[in-house]
Image 1 (cartoon, rainbow, N blue to C red):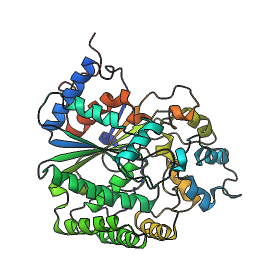
Image 2: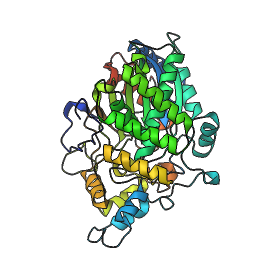
Image 3: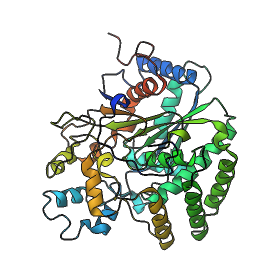
Image 4: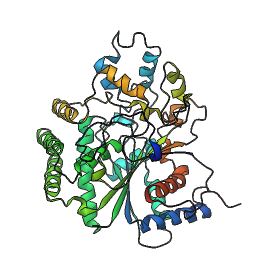
Length: 434
């Protein structure tokens, strides 16, 4: 996507990403919390500090209690009506696998649903009910921080942020404002400024929140920014959310003055994020997309997922091809807002960020099987989470593995190498020493 992207949708190119593309698989690594593991993590932490990174932010939502595939919008747009799936073998079975309540992902206790709040109580019950499946637990973040800071140089600050998990355009736009407001307070609290970097690791649709953030942070005066902020501000007033209204007003002032985040660079790593919103590379620092992917194609195009019907309905329940949430939660899918104020605001954001609409449009985007956005590096990883188990909670259709403790060291090594140009020779070891 171009500089001054102005909230354009990704072009969904099927071309070879060239030198932006990396392909690898999870290797045997030192066992978590073993001496060799701590030693390796500490070395990678030192390299992060050398690169100017002062803080790590782990951003995620919840797989439970949400329409993670966005099937509500597909059904509203005609996916469940006779005629739309006529002649497309396996499409009805695929929609059944995607629908909330039918996809095997259980609801949260007491039927808790978005919007979720980023506080200690929310984090605690997510950890209890979900564990580390697509969820950066408090234990995960504390362990990462302790291990990365083990060599005792300038410390890396580590924080966990739960975004509201409303899987529609308005929800992601509001989350982008809230995240920028949170990051601004973080920079002020820790006295971060020019020359410092914050790395955000964003799971799933949290990465789409960061895509909107990249457009908001464009240093040029783009036309979409005041419009998006206006929509969110009006929604905050109509829905009686004073804290959101204050956040929009504060962010608008900072953006107008060009001093948002105290000139700290924001580096972004997405984990299993669907390819939807376009990224503005001028608004952020470094950008890397990591996708759980297994090459099943026979045409040699290993950078594309395999999207064929009806075979996909056989593959999905065992996560045969990798991350099916990343592959299928594309343009045209979404959860539905629950209030009239939210529906109106969602339509307004929709017109700005995503021209695609209708069930056929979703099917077209899904069939393009694009794994890599048009901006940033793209790392396709075989996480080896396909064990033949059809129990959804073992893999969540390939979307859960990124936040597992056992891949923390692997992810850290790949991120530092590929974002900050650290050679394998300089990097820390991954495997146990013989």
